[in-house]
Structures are given as structure tokens and as C-alpha cells.
Image (cartoon, rainbow, N blue to C red; front, side, top):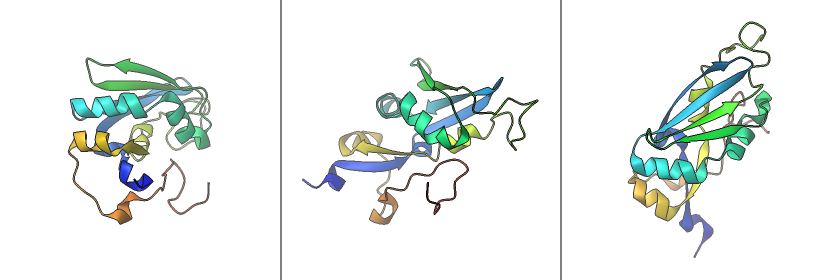
Length: 143
């Protein structure tokens, strides 16, 4: 069986909401599943390492993940991502409010069986590319 037929790529925002904010020079990002099936996907595919890699261009430290199963959510602590925090940082988003929106653009490659459980609409082959969008990086930029 072809590799492309056993996996699908989804945008995190298709299965989750997010909230974020500052915690000193770090930030908190909560990712909340839209449905119970989505929480199973989050638990399996959205690791602390994956989030750390996604936010690496912003200088994030070692990311910590906390599970909140009663809420169907994951909480990520992103140390040092705010470059000193709200009162010291020269970043446009010194309070980290846009980090939640940025993480929703993350692409997750999931097994087709998991995708089928989500009951998401079928998309064209063109939208199944391997592109990974990272915060602060243009879609066509070389990372």
C-alpha cells in the first residue's frame, strides 16, 4: 500500500481550539479538542517535542505538556518564548496572545484510520502537501 494512502495531513485548527497568554518570559498554550475523538488525536500526535520544534524559530526553551482529560485539552508551557516577557520584550506580541492562533496552523500527519474517526470532510490531493507552516515564517520561505 502506498505511504500517501495510509496517512493524511490535517491542520490542527480543524480539530481543536486554542488559548494562550504570558507567564513571565514564557507562555502557556492550551489546545482544546472540538470533539472527544479529537482529544485522542491530540494525545497521540501533539507531543511536547513537536510543539517545541514548531516554535523553535521564536527561541522557545524545553516545552512541557500537561494533559487535562476532563476538559479534552492539552496545556503546553513554553519557557523563554517571549524574550523577557511583557515589560522587557520588544516583540509585537509580548503577552503571547497570538501563540494559540499560530499553533492552530500546525500540520499533523496522522494515520488514515485516525482521520476516518474524526469524520472530517474529504479534501483535494493538492491540500495534502507536506508544507509545515511555522509562526513568523512566510509560507514559501526556506526554513
